[in-house]
Length: 119
Image: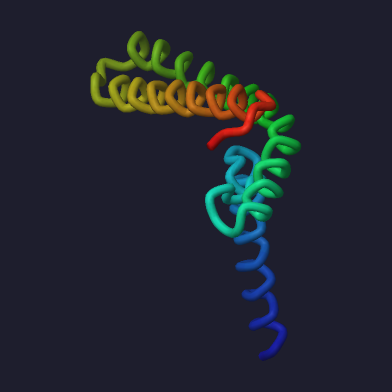
């Protein structure tokens, strides 16, 4: 009976680990620290940390560019292959969200790569 319970626990741990890995693969929030919390020294340390890890943002940009290109291709294909405007519209909205994410990520990367003090 304990073996069946351990199998279930292992399966749920595996699925949680997979979802966490996929989340970390596509979203970079886990890399950075809050530079608005703590004392002045803690904020400066968090900003240094964030600037040092901003080197990974172009990797996330490339990943999302691939996702955006795939969604754009699916949008174009669905318009021709199906006579379903709702599917095309849903994919177009997803594409717009990817573009917004790319623009915000590019802006954050550019701001973190500058060496001026943000106050």
